[in-house]
Structures are given as C-alpha cells and as structure tokens.
Length: 350
Image (tube, rainbow, N blue to C red; front, top):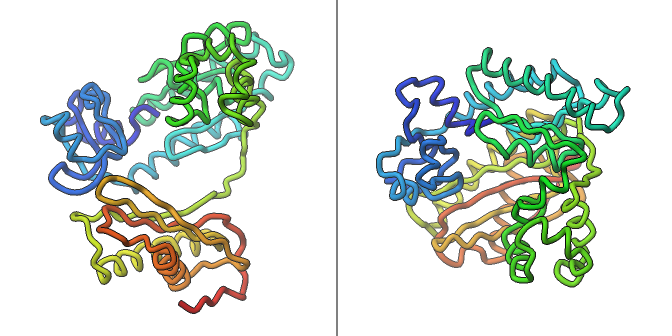
C-alpha cells in the first residue's frame, strides 16, 4: 500500500488531502514518525524519524496521532480482496503481501507469457482497492519475491511494474546495491568502499565478492542476477509480539520504568492469551538519549504467557545486563519463538 497510515487518514479526513500529513507524535513531544504522506516526504520526512526532526524539516506539516485499530481494520479489508484472487498469500505486514499466481498460469510455466498474463490480475487488484477502499497500491509482477518487491517500490505511488525474466539482469544493473534484500547500511558501506555501488558492479565483479562479504557472497550473487528461490509462505503464524514506550523525557526513575514495564508486559501477555500461544524467548530493548539502541534476550525451556512472568524476566534482563546505566528514551518488551503453551510455566527467582 502507498503511505498506508497517512493515506487512510487522508481518505477519512478530506481536509488533509494534498497536504503534508505526518502520522505520529507531535513535534513538541517525544516520539517518532509512524508514516508520512507523499506531500510530507518531499521535505525528507520519513518513518522512524524523531518527530522533533520531522517538525523542523516540515514546519507546516500536520501531525496526527496514529489510529492502529483503524489501520488494522483497513488491512483486513484489503487482505480479503487479495484472498479472493488466490489463497496462496503471504502477509508480510499490515500493508504488504506476496501473492503466488503460478497456479493460475500453470500451462505457461515460468515464462514471460505467464508474467504478462498476471498483469491483468494485478490491474484488477489495483482497481478493486481504489474502488472499494478509496486507496492506492503499488504492485510488482515478477517470477520471484525479490524482483516482485523491487517492482512494487519502483513506481510508487500507484505503480504497476512488470519485470520480465528476459529483462531482469538489465533492469537490475543500474540499481543501488542497497536495493537488495539483506544489504543493510553497514554491508552497503563495505560494498561501496570496495567499488560495488550498483547491482551492475556486482554482476561484473562477482568473483571478488567472497573476500568482501564472506558467506553472504553466494546469496548476493544470486540476487544480483535476479534469482530468488524463497517460496510464498502461507502460514499465518506470528513470529513475535512486542510493545514499546517512548518517554516524554529521558528517565532512569525506577518506579516509572517498572510501571512502564508492567504495562507492556500486560499488553504482550494479552496478545499471547488471545492467540493461545506461549513464548520461549523474552527480549528487552532500550534506547538512550543519543539513540544508541540495545536489545538483550533470554531463551527458556518452557514457554511463558503471563504478564507476571514476562515482567519478571524483563526485569531480570535489565538488571543482569545493567541496561539502565543512563536515562532511557525508549523501553520495550518483546517475545518470540512462539509455541503452544504448557501447564508447567517457568518460575524464576529474581
């Protein structure tokens, strides 16, 4: 979806349309940008940016608080439209999904003809979302997930990009190495320092990659030539659940931190109970005044699913790793390795 949160707000509030809209905390308070309309992005406002910074970049921006329930409800409506096209769907996030249409064109095999035939389905998806939900979406059509994702980002907003098999190497050649899934800022800087600025550089100098990125070389080489064998994962299993609190002022006040920790543990436990699952991993996240962010976790033998257990384990991690060494800007609690709960829950003396 295109600037999903902001687009929902502009649809529901006509007075915001055509204006720089920023979904997140106001610039006078501590917090971050959740989403920015395309009008706001012209001022270089982006998600995860501190709201204060966004306010300086876009002084005339309209800041609105996020309505997560509204966005989740909208996401459910859009996913139903996608499921009416194919049951083979992988929901990546609230506003993004992969659809496997190969069964619809099995007689064509993995050919350009199949991709061209899929374009009409992509166009119909765009039409339905525009008509039924009054929102725009950008779609990439390709033979694998890596290329489809690239295509969906290529002509935003309201784009439809087809990457044919015969064209994929040339299509990738001028793109930055940062376009490749798995190439983060650190890896990108290493590659660029060695002369690999574009994917085309990777295509022509593949023999040199192992000395630069080690074991990642084979995957990087495959991506450079547009190859990706990941399947569309149709399982609906959640991978993790988390909650975070950004404080209005940096704080190391123990009662304040304990209260925030209890609230977040209660939220996480509520989600576990709702989905009838437990967690084998508990994690805490802290962010300091200089935006340095640390996470620490503990793996358990038996799953936990109550607020009390999650709270005690989070406290244990904070104390063991001495994470409250200076005032915190943000505190978070998360769980992962989600499994069915058991009767025998962990009891950890702290």
